[in-house]
Image 1 (tube, rainbow, N blue to C red):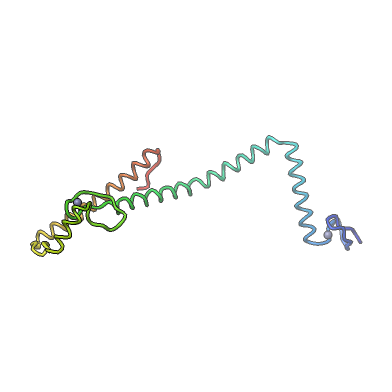
Image 2: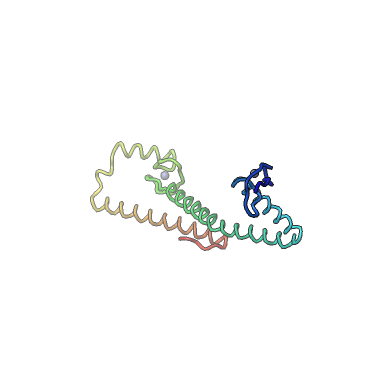
Length: 166
Ligand SMILES: [Zn+2]
Ligand SMILES: [Zn+2]
């Protein structure tokens, strides 16, 4: 039976209730029909459609929330780590200071003192016990610094009424 395609107007040999000539035209027709149905539904129940859309958006937002939270947690943990790694103790006077570079002294004054010390190398005169003690103290200071960084992150979360990951 020769029919005319409702989409492109071409003639084709169609059986039964077929209304389009090809798969492409059938797809276009289906899409148009769906659009029409949607428009009709919206005209009939506008409030229902709006509520459905709002619910969908709320679900999408809820889905995205954990990802955002994880990113925020990672960002804060990184920040705390960075602060801890950049907070160091002056090798001369022992004062804590913050520096982005790998500098070992807190001030010009201490830098000059250290310069003199390294040239004279007084650490060569240290006894083994003293040197070990020095190392253990350094380790303890590092641990304290890490603990302080963890505390810093926990406090950040507490301030925002969120559960801390660490
Ligand atoms: Zn067609
Ligand atoms: Zn210093």
